[in-house]
Image 1 (cartoon, rainbow over the protein chains, first blue to last red):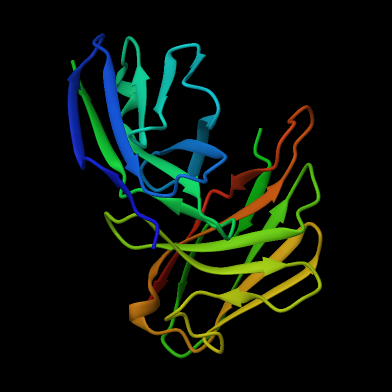
Image 2: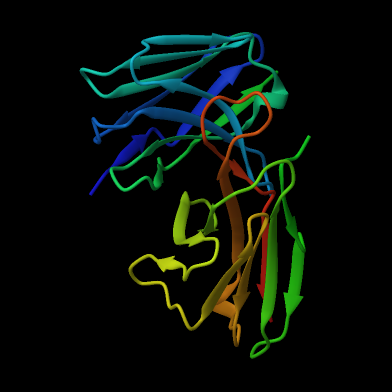
Length: 110
Length: 119
């Protein structure tokens, strides 16, 4: 079945950029998503990218998509302590179910 | 603001009792809602897909008699955990598929989650 993989942990200093990576297997995905989960809370949709785009920028967030390599990344500029959370990438499979990655825990230290 | 709500946000119950969790789409009609379960430090696991007016479709390994889903209207889906046991303790998250306001595409909007603790 479809597989979405992420690195488990990322630690960055406040003010630096964070880059969270994701690889997926279903090449038919139309949209790919990034979600943020703060402790004890549900998922918050951060941004999404259409599969015919290779980059999307939204304020401090930049999404890069390499469709050939099935690689998605989320860059957070000027990372703040409030960005500490778990970040999930997700794609729809060929039955329109949303498949999530394993999540990357981002820790921001002063 | 929030577009999907869940109620309750936190519930503690005794083993053997049933618990109902509500999921509502606030600004749009959702023909499809999803129920997820999240184990500690793990990603979300899709439990079932709920379509308004029809029976829910359960993922493999999810007991449909244990987790009853009712999608009675375009804005409400409920998940009932029947005869709950401690191993059912988890974080349950619903999502609704639809378009909000100026959105040009269907997106899944997630509820804040319900933490169930079974004693």
